[in-house]
Length: 279
Ligand code: HPA
Image (cartoon, rainbow, N blue to C red; front, side, top):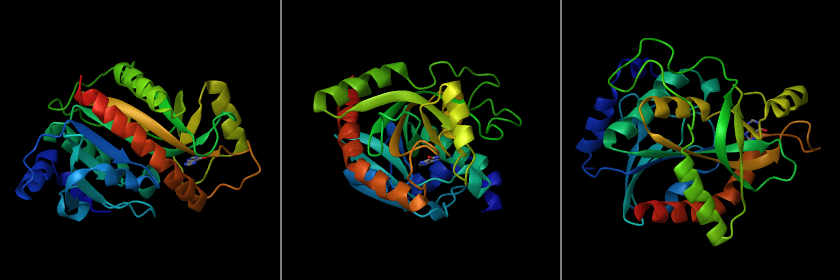
């Protein structure tokens, strides 16, 4: 990990992106989760900037992440896609994610769509299904907003009620119903990883009200809400969580199933972007 990420301001990242000739104001940011990099295929008129060319951005070492910013349009709506992101378990996660999400904000994004691969705690929502997130439980150590507040981005104390934008969620569910994609809703619980959870942890998470489990997304949501971005969260369910089936959990399995669900997720997101373009 590059220590320099601590020293960069998102303005430096925006300047580097503008210097590459990208002058549009994206309406929507999209973050692709593990095995979901193909979501960037739906972007037209692509300008691709590798993370290594953007100050403070760092490559994920995890297989299944492309590590580039893809700028372009979906249904004429300007979008900016973070194709690949780091995880808490890779170290230095918070400053890097802050830099990435705040760069989307400074570029002009109003909304971020955060996607991830996740395990399901609900047996009726199995591998290959999609779940729109309604809320989360933060079981990851720390919080990216600990430390001196940066008032240029947001307030010291900020609300996490309605963190997953209820209006966007309604639109997403309406689009899913219209195009015939089953879309569950539920609460995401974020664990640190890199180990998958124990069956006992999953039983506890279920009592707490969690429906999906993963190792990402929660910090991104905190950073995004702090700076006033609207958030949409969608989990691609790749497995039943630990102890709920006989299947052995593996990253290879996560990537394989996420890629299958990516096609459905692309159709859903195309419909969502078309719907918000008309709002
Ligand atoms: N647990 C945590 N992260 C995951 C899982 C899981 O079961 N599946 C995909 N990512």
